[in-house]
Image (cartoon, rainbow, N blue to C red; front, top):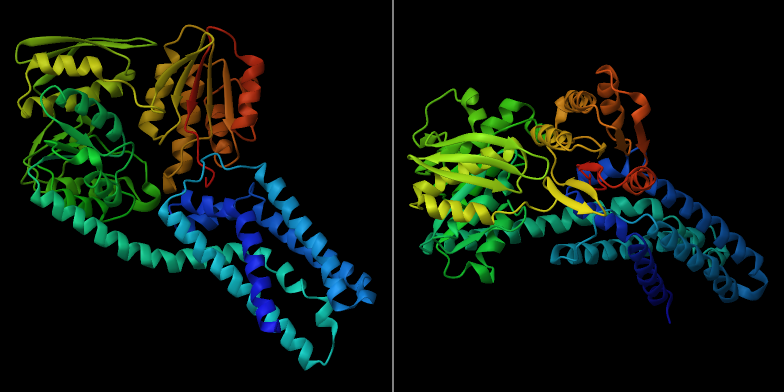
Length: 532
């Protein structure tokens, strides 16, 4: 074989080894929403030693392969390279094994985009490996030395610290293709919606969207065939996937959850869905990181009023934000009155008064937030012609959504799972829900993220709320925001002997296993993904 062919084979083998052994970074890129900025924020985080390990791997590869090759130089170039390949492959395998022990909390999903990104990443590693080995060969030739034959693995040893850069570059290139592809997919889905006779409902807000969607679906199913965007699919792509799903055919109502992380997102979703009715739950500090201020969040979410919807049902807290008149009709669900509220540890009871009729509701949905969500869903259901009897039947079937203040029981221990998509308002409600239990009470939390310049204030307030609840155990997880939460807890005269800090969720669970007993209640508030 010619030197060129050997270099290509070696570069491909190197790309295979390094891409597979650093698959975790591809998963972190997926968690970052395929945003390079978020990915590098994760990589540079103080407690993230992944880049340090890459640098150590590079140094070890450089030293061991060079020394081994020179030690066996008496066997000639081929013999020396053969023996130096042993520590090279062994070190990469050891790195992959050791790093694999630090698995991502959120499993990597083998989506089409991830596979395409991985393919481009592999290609870029191979190109970089071929370039480095070719440069070394050229330098050796220029200086007229035969050392190249003994240092064949040295260029590959320089690659590990470059891998995050290559992944970011691959994501940048592949992302341009994805954006164009996704835009066409979304446009086709929009045309399908325009052509189909289906009642479209949009749900926006900083919190409660998925819960309202779940309650509304339970009620509307008493009269209509309903399809909703699954889980937290609240982007144009998520809605497009719903339109092209098997469950979309022959449905009468589409409930579309509509999320926003940057300016223009709600407007784009409204142009796609063209909702006839909408529910606007409320706004809070969530996502201020991208919108800059609470007013910025309001401006983005209030685009729903310009969507052309016949009527928008708004949460009570939005009254204070209304500073202008909108063409669409706005309702605060005044025709749905709540009485006789009884907030219990394991259930919520209240009476709905609708047009002189009453519905006694007993639900596993917990807290005041659940009552507000029910009011909004019931008001829209009435607008769509459901009877009080149908509404009552639908409410009885509504169940908590996994990881959103979901009550579980395990060996006599009550677990409040509020791990998903935590926001300041939801956190306050979750702590109140925990306080209603009669046994010992514990909270496990890493704090609240995505609140931008208000993040420290939000987390200090969270610490104060925990202190005021007078819990029996407080476990703060990680190091991203726990210092701020701890400060808020201390400033509110929280008992510091009850507080402890765990490195990760696994360590927190170990602490709980020694403390918890039957009758206790534990709140898991916001299980942050690895990229935080």
